Length: 465
Ligand SMILES: [Zn+2]
Ligand SMILES: [Zn+2]
Image 1 (tube, rainbow, N blue to C red):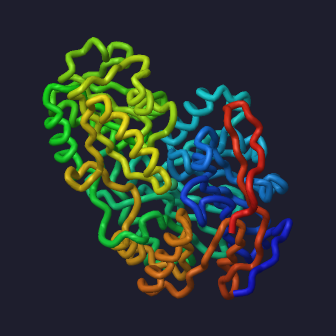
Image 2: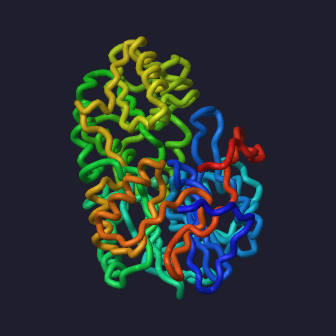
């Protein structure tokens, strides 16, 4: 395929349905997707990612292509409350100024995030409530949220319907038959969509290189419980992602089962648990202890959940390893359990964290296969096959992945009988309809970087390929 020239602008006409990612396609993080039809753009998600080269800052997708035609932007639809899907909004919304649709839990997380950062425009936000099964007309798009399962409450796919065709944008998902938080996935709606042979499915590629099916969150409880019991009379600190609400709930259950009290170390975990409790998703009758009191508890009653499982500087686990955490000093015989995957690129930082903990006499239990203590929130290949079997799209557009994930997803979609696979990347305008689907233009993209909450984002690096 010849490479289309970068165009300063592209306006979808009345017959056109186009998909254009500005972030998250060719990388894992900072998802920003646009759908174009009849002179309008609809944005799906607006996320950030940690700058792995310089972890004191975060990266945002450069929205200039759509910001320059913000009058055509009819709305922003959020699929779920993870940072790689909504975390850029505190910085990017002033350039977009469109109404936002989110389900109640996602809206709660967004509101807390804006409040925490003291964002001055928070009062100007036009934040509207989305409910699965209740379509909204947003400009020329009819948008319907469909309940899926992931690692957080209310993960949704969206069905975008236009006279030019219908698209399923999956967001992040896995197939949980008995989810630890939230509702079951709506298989019947996906199958009903499949009976009409929708034009396209644009979807999660994170685990497209992984054979089999992603294990259920509930299957982790016995392994985590065993790891906690093996800590004997010592304290237990579990490192996990604050965004993994399902894991936090599982750990709440483990605390109840092992007679320990639960404590949150790290602001991000407190905020996520606060949002889950505020919207009725917590559901575990566990005894809490505030961080400031944790030092007074008998050691065998402590189960703390801490940020910093990737070895991030200044996170709770980093401070515990350094012996300068404000509320807790770990002692020989205490245990740290890492219940999170190692994000590629973080291996060294995690190894250093473990070494420092061990040097203090702390036992470290990792996701080493000996204990079944972590499961992904994304679909492996058998899960993708099932989804394609239900939805039966004519076009597949792999997104939410690095090149190797997108390629593996493309190959799988072909194997599932999808007629056309479009190799989208950030900045490629994928024309889904009319006529033969293809990449018809390339628009400017890039990355912005911020270090502090009140920073203005500054462009970094060249455009992504
Ligand atoms: Zn997610
Ligand atoms: Zn994601």
